[in-house]
Length: 121
Image (cartoon, rainbow, N blue to C red; front, side, top):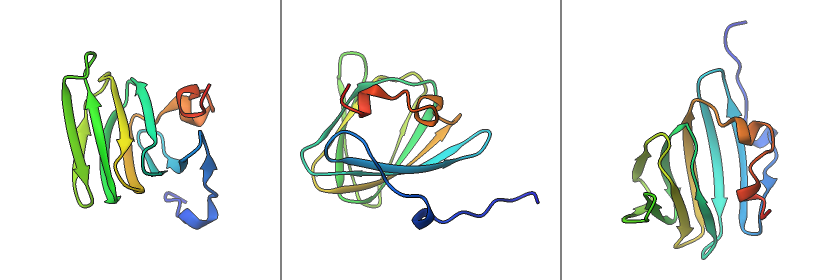
């Protein structure tokens, strides 16, 4: 079989730090993730080699990009932000938010559970 069909509902949400849940699927070259962030919660500044395409399904995020945080974007439902590879960034939920993220290549830190910045460690 060449394809692999999966259902989001068959993949339980993973509870990370308080106010953040996610679930994801990945292939060899890309990853798609549902990320749920409660209003007021901040995803701490981090950086990764993967290019990230953030699509806000519902809610709104304030994303701060750059080593000095000099680029700020408010991204709302129906909008997309493309974050380049190796770009430091953080995100704060302005509302309860459902965010669909696409990464290429897949995030090895997520796959291996080595994403301490999201686990409050």
